[in-house]
Length: 289
Image (cartoon, rainbow, N blue to C red; front, side, top):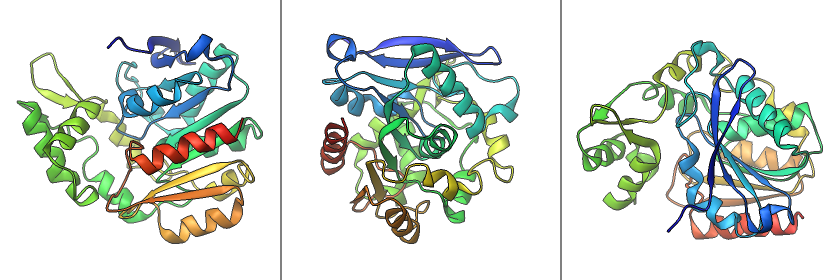
């Protein structure tokens, strides 16, 4: 089946060539407001392949790959691998495309970016999906991520890669079978020039992640307040070590327009391909027009 997206590029303020998938939607996607999908720390545009296909049936979908991921340039200065810089990059893309109002789907780091963008320019987001992330991030989850990000592992075959992911992330997805681990491997890895299968991101993203305040910016409750009364879907993995039940409860209290879906027997982060999650996302976006 032919791809329903176009590979496009834009240039960051510091001159990097950055990639995004553009799903035009029907009639160029002009009938409904576009959706911006933003991935997590070690992920890329492939993370949203299935969701974007569904959303593109009725609207335009834009899936940027942050610097150092996928087809986007790696940054010569690793200090620019930070949520604030990623936000600057995405804002430049939105400005170039003339997009002033939009919905957002943000997974993990993408959700942190969503809050920062909302705080900087309130009132633009018509609906928000926050995938397993909130204004407070649990220390144990950050410690777990620090334990694998930037490790630079490689594998001889896709099956070896899938088994490597299962070993590292099995507690978060205890019911995954080999086919699901293979799918995750192909979302997150590529075949390198030497034929080995490697993670599809710059290992240098680990350097700033380890610095205080870079992994999860402080005082994000203030940023979250900019989303008050914005229609929102909070997706949480039941086994998540990054988003606590207490933080979820506080988020719901601060945003009366927030709905919640808890994905059973899943940790950080749900794939957004779960049937109950997909249905809730489509309903949220249709109701927010």
